[in-house]
Image (cartoon, rainbow, N blue to C red; front, side, top):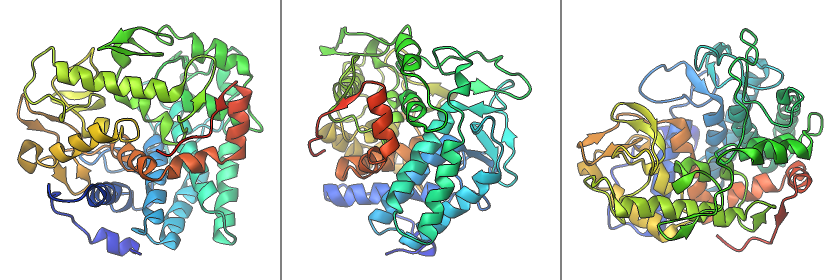
Length: 424
């Protein structure tokens, strides 16, 4: 097994096209994991928001993704179990003292002081969706570290944090969850969480809480009442059950499903494996059709999702296609399209003359059209690469999150049913 120092000393060269599939997946997961291990904030242990500015800014949601990535690293022997446990202990101790707002964490924290950093002028308080991503990672860790001593103490600390989130309070007494609350601005952002998008896990966790659970009506009248919730139309010959036309950015099929296992999972609205598979196929089919005639797009070079772009950050999708591809889009889709994602992975190893590969895996985005490659790595893009490749290979994070008894009860409360999942 590798120690913390051992991993920090490793710098992989660009992947060789001659590597076997397993060796290539190992390399990509290990190198990408370094973002959350080597590049983590030195005080809090949490994930920095991005690599190319504001080193004190840590991200709560991205840290939840990073926790899952660390579990994959421990399971594969790239990190010692004791080292992973110690790192999570550092995170939990920091989070216990950090700013919270009715139990919810802000989108960003100062990694040294634990004070909230405003994400936008009115977004300086609780962010329920980012909190959900963090809690999902913590629950997976709680299920993984099942021993005594320090592991038991870690589980207790996780339970204290997650049961302190006042999900029901964030309904404002209405039948919908609200994304933000600020101690200065109150509910001024007025952003109800309605689907279909990346936020399903917030409703699942809210229904699973023992102390602050929501009523099922909040899910059915709030989440399932969004203007883009139901679809049912075909795009590129693929029927899309839920979501905006052409599916939206691919992170809709990733963020909530780092922990929620879509295999065999359904409710009155959709089969969630069918939903995510359709979304991924439509996204790839758009890149193959390439209606804007961007250079480089094709069957092995695809994937539109939120990432850095030529001019700032953008939520790339078939309806907002700027000629910028994001490696996380195809690579985090491995469970849904393994052959197509592997073809994209092999293509990316040589893309942009090798400039796409660096210290923390693949850089955030690139544009063959403009010969542009991002100089950045983002926590919310690197994390899903490690986690979803691991779910493809072993189902580890799916198994851990879904094994939490509260999650099983919460899903049942909302009317979800599960068939026994086939192997990935």
